[in-house]
Image (cartoon, rainbow, N blue to C red; front, side, top):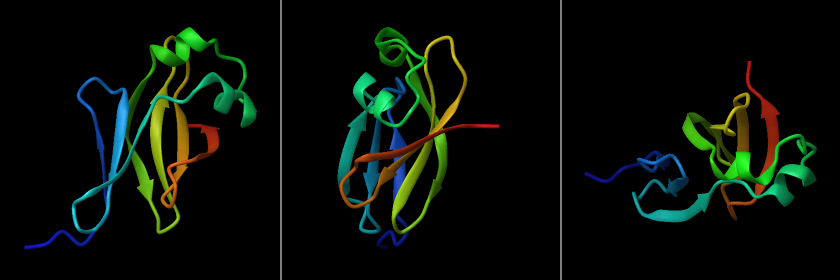
Length: 97
């Protein structure tokens, strides 16, 4: 039986996420956000080391256009990170509540 719903897998160490299409095949894999992306999207309060030590926690949602996962920088708050389904580009960061 073929899978019909896209999924996101978080690695055991929380350092990568893998987006799989409805066919179950990995379309892209991304690691923790870079300091440049973090600053580009207006969340420059964390140091690079805090991001490197951070982890992805769980999937928050998938739409046809984006994937949102919860990410926790080391020693910080939880954030929703939204990635483009099309190209895995980080497009939005916002604090979770």
